[in-house]
Image 1 (spheres, rainbow, N blue to C red):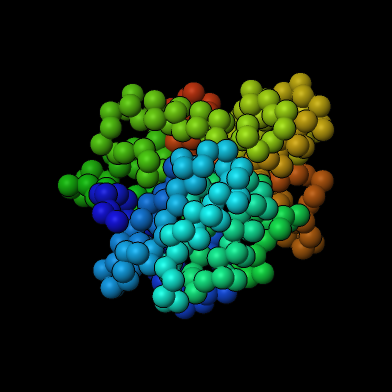
Image 2: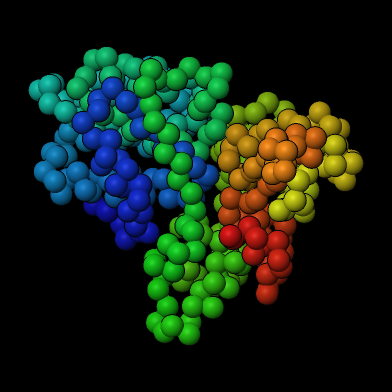
Length: 311
């Protein structure tokens, strides 16, 4: 597989290499759309080929494009794999990219691990397909792929001069660290790309997975959450500010958590060493560019809450 020029993610490649040799464990790469999961896989495949793994012992399936509807037909995926898996018994590397339908992907993984000498890696942006209440492989390890931290952003897009670092930081604070938002684009093109990414998340990651989802309302909840960025907030507060019911807000906050659109921590009382559940949770956007696009606001210079989010 010829690798396109992309943002390198050595930390995740190293993690996948560390797990080599364990055919019983499924590797699950998970993260929001646009954070670079598929690029990690393509880069890892290139490293396998460089180390002498034959191309016919690498089976890559881009499920979202090939089979639409997110694993709607599990038997078709299994049939495809059966047709393309080598019969010599040698180790084969299987990659299922774009898993979205809960439970079905596990059946595919179990089929491959039961019938072939293979290492399986799954790539998904769906929190609903992973975790509590879902059928999972007997052994799996989750690798959370995040947008670029500023340190990695600076290494990826090094300034020509030391004095240009503040300009790079401004870029990061306005448009975030998602590798899919090319730093070489104009500012208007970056804003357009971020809006397109939000629309992709809506169409491909939210609407197909949750019944009766009102995206306008979940966007309202997200904006409400991030209005309190860096301070504890609970569902009652968000409900009062948005005009939604507590039940609606509770559901949408759970979706935000599940789909990893926000990073959150529980408020904690250091003096008495106990969680302050009554205060709610503290939320941060998973990416500053997405936050700005969601709010349709690109403060320049950034406000103090965005600095806190970056930290």
